[in-house]
Image (cartoon, rainbow, N blue to C red; front, side):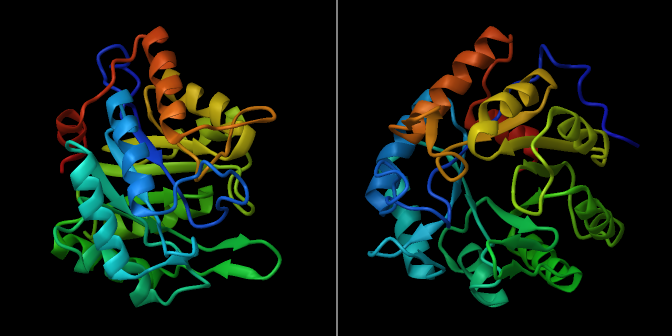
Length: 284
């Protein structure tokens, strides 16, 4: 059955995810982007206060370079626990083309406690001139099975409509538990072009039962996440996806994005989900 989740718009609470850092640009793009554990945790505490219930995490080493070190992810977890109340932690398993298959999933399985969620990239993506992130069906079957055994819920990242058959395959194989948590991504290099009608198309092709959030990169973040709110979906904001608060104005913090999202949601009559409510909605 196709997605039909708009009917309860006025009662359905909005889940706000924040992607604080990412694995691409760093302080050379925006000096306010948090890279080190204490920087991330301090910014994240303000995000949680503003209404974010999920954090999507990439780790950086002491030099600010991307890393899959389990020890570094453990340090992130421990520092977030020190600064934040109860935010839901979601680790990336991205990094195809740079890190090995095992390196990518290791932090989600080997930290203590494990994160409640971890991403799964459902298909290949090009980055820049020479890099392709290869996410095969075999890899996704393995990741889905290992995450399920570890009690970590997959966040299914849909970069373009061609990733839906891969999601359907995992569902048909019984490797995913409901409700499916889907992230609809617009504006990436070989992803879905950032346009309102393309978001509608992605939503129309969701499996049932699903909860979904939208993200869009750069200047497209604000209009398309606002559209997602009006469609009854959820949103991801943050400096991984966009370093500018508005044209020619660098974001001061991730909390600045969350605060704006919460203000917009209030005007659109969407109450904000706290972490317990988000857990209940996502079956955590």
